[in-house]
Image 1 (cartoon, one colour):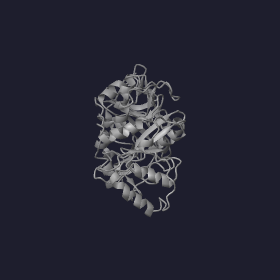
Image 2 (cartoon, helix red, strand yellow):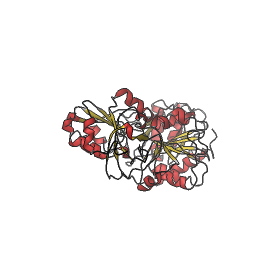
Image 3 (cartoon, one colour):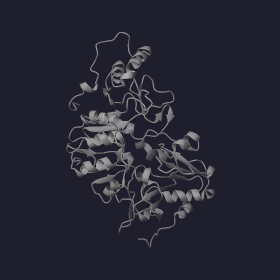
Image 4 (cartoon, helix red, strand yellow):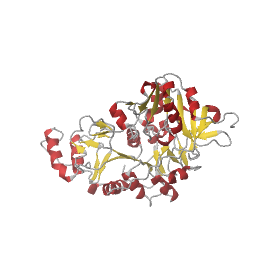
Length: 446
């Protein structure tokens, strides 16, 4: 196979990049570091080339604008590597739901070439995109690929394989994957996880992310049975549940008996577990995050974090203090999918206050904040003080339920502001069940 198309030095990619090219790069560890190094080093040979990527892991000179008009970064989800650059105007940000990324790239860019990290080719000439499928797997067979192969990339299954005949070229490196250790849950994270865990029935299909609350939740599900995983991100916490036999996927409809995701990020333990593991399938994001596909699963449970919720139930999950911090990601995809799932439930979780003590539940969102998940879609909001059930309730009932799970020191002010703004009527009707922690059902009732 190598005689037909041998590996090349990373600089060979430059021969395939024309003027005004739109280069597509996977997120996280799908990023081909050596290929991007080559583009930066020889950026003066490039003419108005753009690199499109969600969630870059590595801060780079070209992201900071040091390559001028030759090479510019277009982000679809800010990270520590791109956040300050966006604030400084040296990279761009495109808002998009994660599920819509493949179509957005096809419609709004030239899709000139995909540059991606990959596992080594097998005896049949197939590479895999390893930890990723995301928005680049749907482009296989339609867009040229230039791959960066590393022996540290796990070989995975699903719809992320690409044959040597489908690549424009490939290079080899010995780069190790970037590790992200699990976040140690705080007391607030544990309190939130305890509440949410009560609503997870045996046989449920889960979407969980990465962070303190997901880690605390997964650790509380060790005695559950027949859970399924259909999530955009696999992190370390899922490994133990699979190994203990808690996650079997027997009740799932999309790829039953399989753990389904569109990318993975964690420690070396996770990457070693993924390697040649037929129980895991990496599928394109326009399949994994499609709300219509998610809705086919009974008892679908979605857990996502936000930074701020107003008393109408609007969730601002991509701005902090009115300033862009990330982007939409897949939160709305899974919230809507869970909404249409039989007995499905979606949970938006957040600490009740910021580190500075400011309430994250607010009468109105901070000026400059943008809504990620609409009030009509939000199902449950959970803080360390309880759970507020919002769907199907009046605006006044929503406001009261949210005030009840705010930090105690902020509740009086929130109630006063709610009356002043007309969210709460002056004449108070008989109270409906608040949905607070003491009143939550022992098990989901639909």
